[in-house]
Length: 356
Ligand code: OGA
Ligand code: NI
Image (cartoon, rainbow, N blue to C red):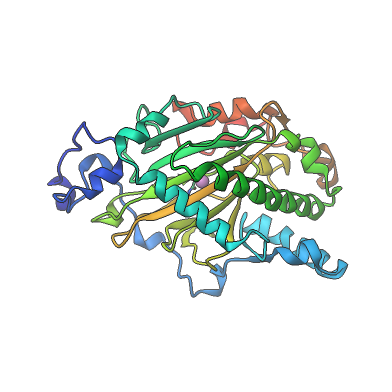
């Protein structure tokens, strides 16, 4: 691509994509960030085949028994075919969701020098970390995003700047965890198990919850860069919110579909431990984040997983009932995360590496 070939080399002094994108000279994607998106792989959002499933959470929490069983029935197909849905009427106040986005915006708006205080190693289990791209030691192509990650459960940690961050993220973490646990209960039931089955087997009283903020500044050639390339998440279930810009794409029937939904909904994706636990019945959906040339996109992903000391294996009850041997080997969650983030499995589906 001529435009990409002419692009500036990335100056080694660049510590965030935010400052690089704000430098006025930038009208092409620097070669270190060159990534091609194929528009032919994108789904037509008007095609009914790509109508994103919506789950009304209020029918799970306060509907009639019939309404609740209908939702649980719908979940079976959604989890098998999509591994993704939008949760509405979830009870988390819109003002809190907005305050959380504003707090993230406040953090990313700090001077690079101040954000650097939050830099740390590459272990996902650290209290918090801040950086650009994904893992600069492993990235072959740099990603058009800055990020932070904070561990909010079982122990709550927080960024200490901006001043509002801690209070907002504590409440937001608590409320989103309630939503995730409600979803986990409904998924247990959809599998014909006791409502608390997954919670107990995964030791979710000590379950890992992270708060991951992503900052995607406008990109001069959005089709030649990527925010986060295709991947699956390592936990059980991830909730995600964003500011007014779209960018999340999920893979469905071999196409990439841009998620566009009610502004106050949660985007919900199933993750690897759910696929492993259900012996492949439910799907950890492949997804990615694209960038745009209009305005900064901020997203906040809130992954929920087992406790890090849990060993996860396909549920014997499910294997027996379906008459299928376990497809995956048992593995400790912490080791799984480390395997996912090692160079060997960089951006690959880690569950493929523990096939029985
Ligand atoms: C993630 C992720 C997508 C987005 O943080 O794991 O998939 O839309 N983010 O930012
Ligand atoms: Ni993800």
